[in-house]
Image 1 (tube, rainbow over the protein chains, first blue to last red):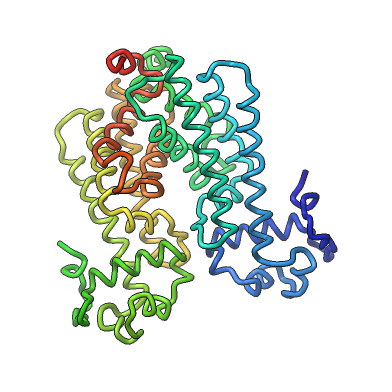
Image 2 (image 1 turned 120 degrees about the vertical axis):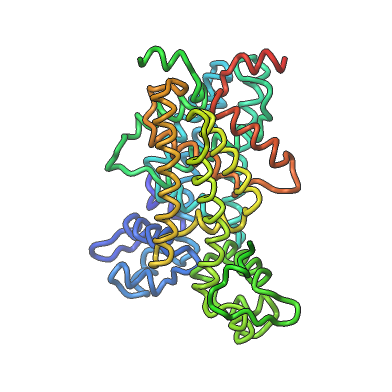
Length: 210
Length: 210
C-alpha cells in the first residue's frame, strides 16, 4: 500500500509530472535538509518547480505531508512489532528478528525514518509520532527483559538502557548509510547483529575469521 | 576555559542578568528545540526577554553563537583524541578510554553535542564542524583497526562500519539521557562499554551477575 492509497482526504488530483508519492519524497528531502519548521510551502513549491496552489492539489497542508511521511516510517516499524508478537520462537530469536527487520526498514525507508528520528515534538502531530516511536522502544525493552528471564541474555544490564543503546546504534544507520556503499544493507545487518550479540571481544568470531 | 574566555571578538560587554555563557546556553536550548535555521535572533531575544540589540552586546551574530556552541562540544571531544594519541597502552585499552571519555563529554555537554549531531552542513561553518566531527570518527575507526591487528578485537567486522555503529550507540545518549535518571552517567558508561565489548550474549557477565 502506498501513501497515495492511504490518503483519506479525497484530494488525489495530480499535476502532470507529479503524484502524491513524488511530492512526498521531495518534501521529505527538503524537511531533512532544512528542518521541517524552516521549510515553508513556498520553499517546497520552488523546489518542485510548481506553484504553491499546485501543491495543494496533492495534499491539503504541510502538516499532512508530515503525517504521510511519518506513516511511511511508522507503519512498517509497527508491523515488525506485530510480527514479533506473533512469532513462536524464544525471546532471543525474536530479538534478533526485531533488530534485523528494523535495520532493513531503516535502509529502505531512510529519508522517512530520518524525519521521524529528528522530530522535536513541537506539535500535537509530532508528539503523537514520538509516542508511537516510544511504544516501539518499549517493546524492544520488554523483549530484552524476556530474553534475560529466559537466560539467553546477560542479566547485569538494565533492559531499558540496553534497548536504548541498541536502538541508538541501529537508528544511527539513517545518518551514515548510503546505498552507494561501502557495505550493502545485508552486510550492515550482519555487522550490527554481530556487534550487539557478540561484542567486540567475541573471540570465537575472531578465531573463525583468522 | 569557558566559552566566554575563548571569545575572540572583543565583544564581552554584558547586560545585567546575562553573560555570554548564559546567552549561549539559552540560545542552544532554542536551536535544539526549533532548529538552528528556524530560530531567528528575534525569537532568541523574546526567549531571553531582552531586545535584539542587547543580544548583539554579547555576540556579533547568530552564526557566532553557533560557532561558540559547537566549540563547547568539539574542543573537549578533540582533546580526547589527543589524549588517546599520547596514551601508552595497547589499542584495546585506548579504545575503551576513548569511548568512556566520549560518553562522559556527551553527558556533560549534552545540549552542545545535540546541536553538533543535528547539523545539516548547510553553511561553511556547519560543514567545517561536520568535518571536525568526521576526523574524530576516523580516529575511532583507526583505533578499531589497530586493536584488530593486535588481536584483541574480532577481525570479521569492518573497522569503519564498527566505529560508526559504536558512535551511533554512544551518540544516541544525547537524545535520551536525563540527569534525573533512571541511571546516572557512570552506570551508563558501564552499560555501553559492557555492551560494546562483551555483547548481549556475554555468558561470563551473566553468570557473575546470577
